[in-house]
Amino acid sequence: MFNIDLDLVRKYDKPGPRYTSYPTAPQFHEGFTAENYIDEIIRTNNADNPPDLSLYFHIPFCDTLCYFCGCNMIVSRNRDRIKEYVNAVKNEIDLLRTYLKPDRKVAQLHWGGGTPTHLMPDEIHDLVSYINQNFEFVDKPENGCEIDPRELNLRSPKSITRRWF
Ligand code: SF4
Image 1 (cartoon, protein in one colour):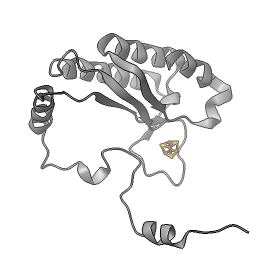
Image 2 (cartoon, rainbow, N blue to C red):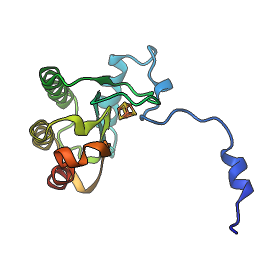
Image 3 (cartoon, rainbow, N blue to C red):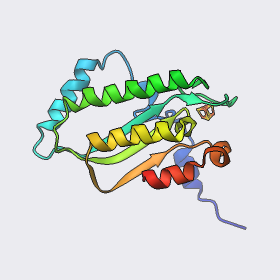
């Protein structure tokens, strides 16, 4: 026998937002423009104590489609297409760097998708190196990466992430 805290069950027995990404999907709307985004970066740059950064990298590729999937992803094994995307992410880092104050450090780093481990080891290494060249990190940052366990034996992401984190 075990005890169930019914108050706790009642507390969370209500609909919540889809939390597969942060900010959650309803927070993305046309009322918050690219200009607002840049203004927000500048505003936080100029704060008395500029907050540390949280970076999210969306890798939208998967090997196969899960029937329950509600993520922003595409099934692709086209390595040229994936490489093109990785290069676009690196361009976005360049763009972001022009706005961010250089001394702001990264406290949280998350790779989601899609399936980040659908990238090949050299593609992961390429992007990680680029991130490390462009950002400084706090001591002991929080790092996360979504993986597809079906690929663990194929590409050994464990060894990749060990090098990475
Ligand atoms: S691994 Fe995740 S993102 Fe990819 S199809 Fe399955 S649920 Fe969707």
